[in-house]
Image (cartoon, rainbow, N blue to C red; front, side):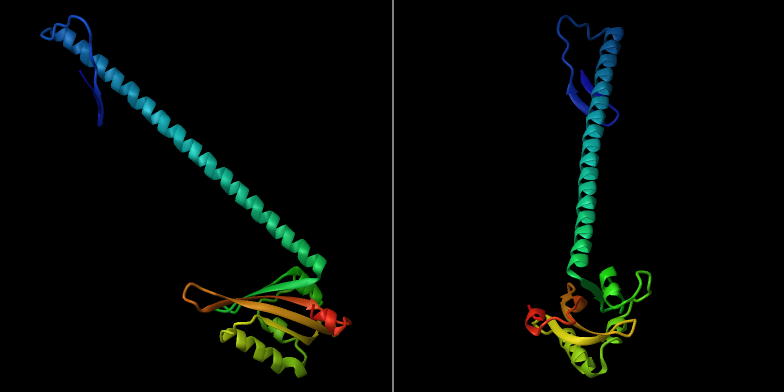
Length: 200
């Protein structure tokens, strides 16, 4: 007897013993058995499929939670490193012109945490006039494709009017087309440090 139901086909059902294939009632009974077996197999197959999907979703959710925890740990670690090292980081999206300045960067230049500063001028606008040309040239070289990362010292005017020496290190990141898309850097207060210590 063929074991089929709807679109599924589970093969054949073999019935042992004497079978009167001409009796309508017997034939109906065996057909009914075959249909019941097909329905049971369909349900078991769907249940197994759902269990596999559930396991896959649980595994995906576990991996996602692990990634979120790893990312959160990395962010917290980076923030702690910045605080201890007294290095402020910044990330300049060259295409949009927007810059992200870390909390430590803001503190170094005397800005409160909630200060609105999203442009590169927040840094370049504080550069001492006598050092402005050097800084602009270094930035231009990076944007033009300089092989070496930016690394320079210059004077900077803090928000409270202090004049400080800072060391700025930065590198550019290209997009898939090879175009300079971002410049990422750190700013360190080296005021009062001997030149040899400042240059590491």
